[in-house]
Image (cartoon, rainbow, N blue to C red; front, side, top):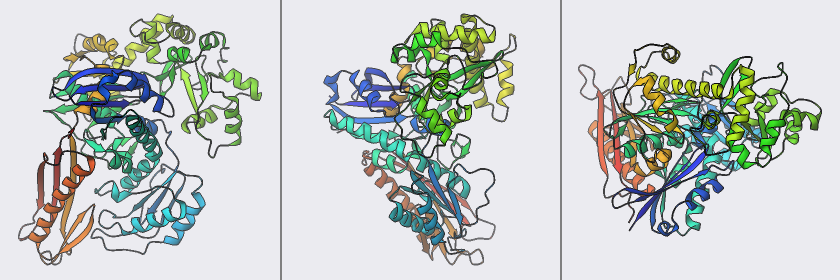
Length: 640
């Protein structure tokens, strides 16, 4: 008997699912807290929760994670230097302070417009190499000719030994700035992904599992581990992609919408006839538009572990994830008493980082480039919960809110606070952790808002549910401002908004929201069995999908039938016959599909390849002005 193992490492929990290959039956599930910043302990505990007798018969391991997404959403990625080659028009702020713009680049036919200024790149690389963890390089029209990107990459690697990501490696779409951002985010995620994937692979091998290891991509397909390490940006939405595919599998609905409530975010997506709906443009994450192909998704930086804070009588939801009070009380002996006795901050000082329920912890990350004030604040924070009052006692002043923010973004400290998870503990609807800590937190914050503990917790739950409803309706009503949709749920009315596709709920405590959501929306709300491990199930239910895009254009519009250029991620090729160029493009696309499936460890004997050809043929032309081929291959696991 053969088995498959699915693992999902989320911002809060790491889940494991064991699937029997013969009938695709789930025979075991397990959950453990995600360990931070090293995910190894959480992965070990999740696998330990499964019956060990099956593990040595596991032949396929598939992994999804939200760690990459959360790094971008929370602004906690690693520092990266960005090299822009060519005539970039920089509008607004770049995602890094370490960047340089130099001469170089190509035109739309891949012809060099100006020599690349390699000396300036060299000086820049030497100046910042000790301040960053990787480099990203993006050249103007590199999708037509990537020689300048490769030249810069080879030189930077020789000088610094650091990873270098090029824009052409990640996307063949036009949009130089978006490719630059995509390359930057990819480089930023390399350390996070390397640590995660090597941790998974080492743990699998240490348990004697002779299994192929895959990672779920953000468009709902799987990729081999080596390819995943080269392009970690493709995993940015692998958690939500896993929830979409997993929800469809668990609910036995080929068409459905999905609400996935995680610790850091709530994600909405939809699948039609077993195929995830894809975004027309690149994935947008953390406010940055990329050129990464991804499922169409509405993501809200609000999850079960989002920070709730109070100032005046206003109750705020902060996007950043914190450790819930209920969980901190179990993890750190003595914290409950510390919470009860910690002094209330003055009303003047009350704010997002100064709350009676806000505490801080030191992580294991090494401090790089921090200010004197940050260094002093960091030295006062211990590896157990530390209040701002305790920081004051140690350094004789209160830390600035800005320095606390900066230390959190750099992953040097982690926060504890009141969350929607705590609210559910107060209401008795989810009681996994310490109820008393949640009650104490609700008393403290409720007193600031003029509410009792249950009234305060009920308000948090209702607002969270209304936000979920607004997210799902907003997903289908494109162009209608979400805030306007959200207002409708505050109106007492017999009218309800209708959602015609089934809505499947995925996530740990989602059962607590199901009835309230049915009261708000006219929709079939489904809470499937094993909904708390939907992402890990989705990692197993996914297939291998590879898309290759190839473009054919005349070398000259003045003589469009004489010479043709074929552009692909493999480079630029020249032909003097259109049919020869087309045959080459088709063969190249099929070869890229087969190579990918083999490298990924997928079954190359069961690949379905579809080719879509779009042509632009002006009146009177004998050959197309432009031919775009999209070659798509779908493969399956080979667990033999």
